[in-house]
Length: 83
Image (cartoon, rainbow, N blue to C red; front, top):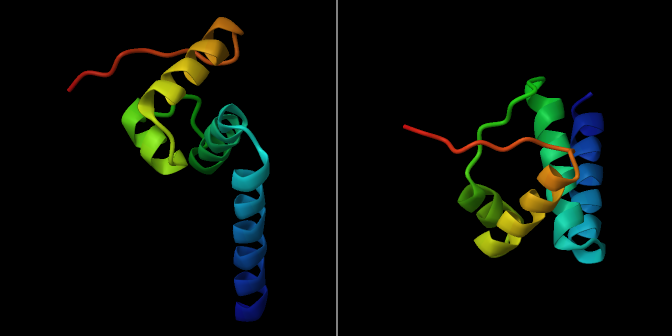
């Protein structure tokens, strides 16, 4: 059982590395948002653009532009966070 779990984690890591190498930054952001929603089972994901940029290894402006495109396309909704 433990070996199957380790193999599943290794396969997930391999897919993630391949995704990072082959896909554009916007595609990686979309994938990351979908995975986050799947794992939280929530419609709302509370993350900062800086957190997403750090996680994806890109500049914050890249995340800002990609999120704007997703918002304009009607795929996501954004709102400013407050403390």
